[in-house]
Image (cartoon, helix red, strand yellow):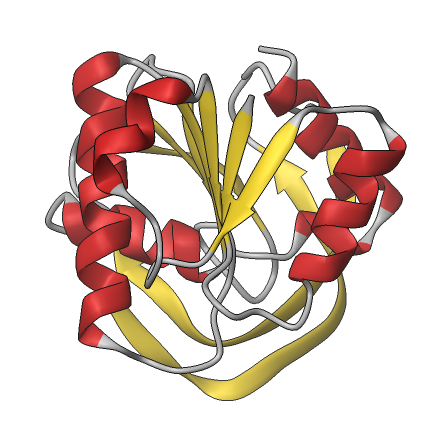
Length: 180
């Protein structure tokens, strides 16, 4: 079962509808009520985007990331989820010059288990990863963003700067991730 951590993104509903449509078993929880002692009950995690910066949300998401790494459990960080993945491991983020919102074509630069070629994706973010820690590998980029998809070394731990739950190509990525 996948744990969807609902950090407040307006797009989380699209994510859970897609998972339901594909008969992918999941449980949705907000960070505020999530029992961290229950993490071992899941075989994967999806960290959603968010709307506001809150220290407690950051701390809980970082703990989930560290648990995932330590126990080699798959994780997909979406938008904020990718940013907190980078931050947790020593990377940095920055405010974008302009709000990134709309469709974008991204190019896959490194072979991986969740996508290949190029993807049509939906962007909606005002921050972006500015520096990756050495353990995170860039897998894809666009004209507007250097780190569209990242991966933790050879582990099944990924981050997307975009919202895969908003396009068909992105949904394919989510489905491949869920069946890793």
